[in-house]
Length: 309
Image (cartoon, rainbow, N blue to C red):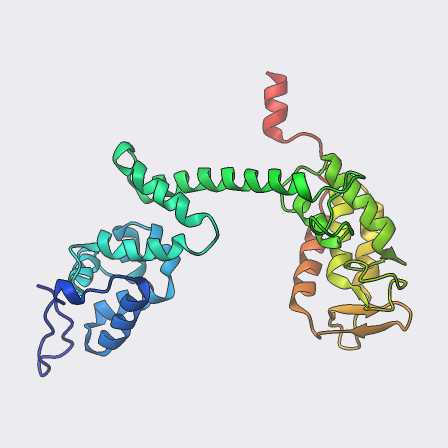
């Protein structure tokens, strides 16, 4: 049986008894760390990959994992056997179980997949992922239906929470990230409300904390300013989008770095500095605004082909 001995001078470790074989992910990782120094070089490469890429291990084939480790697939199988498992699939099951608890509802979907394994012809990692994606899409559709039922303001826009009817600049993101199309009435109403209720002098506040005028409780959020620029561009307001972009881009300190907030009245930067998320959205906005607005670009080439046919 495979062993973890790294040098002849050390006694070779025998395959772990079934009773001591790890039954969950945490025990497995702890055992791998304990035995790492006694492993061969190839086993150490496998150990490092397994511990640093648990999500990949949950879905990739043994051949794909072996390729990433720079070893033969049989080495990965023997590695699993040396830990006391019948084969790699049994070890992989612990990684899949860990992945199944990473998000609400995920475990139920994975269990449903396991029940369908005997009925499915495609048992590859690709087939596993395709089925998982189908279930994820269904779950997201259910989530959208739920929030549409209890987080839709009487005016037709999104609101912050079932018990909080305020508008929030973060509510521009569903359309930007593809949860709903930009022409959706909810997206249009939210954009109009955010621009009217939270916009000031080309800057955007996250939300209105209380009855005080905007700016007294906190500064404008530069992240929200770039989000507004993206939303306006998505809806075809290209000139206005560039104005918002340039306004927020210029709200930087002497080093040229952007902060979390900007005090419009005092013309001073506020909050965390530098703010990485703001710089990330600055770059995304610059890239997107340099291209035609989706609303002005016309139908996708595949749609034009279908129409022509």
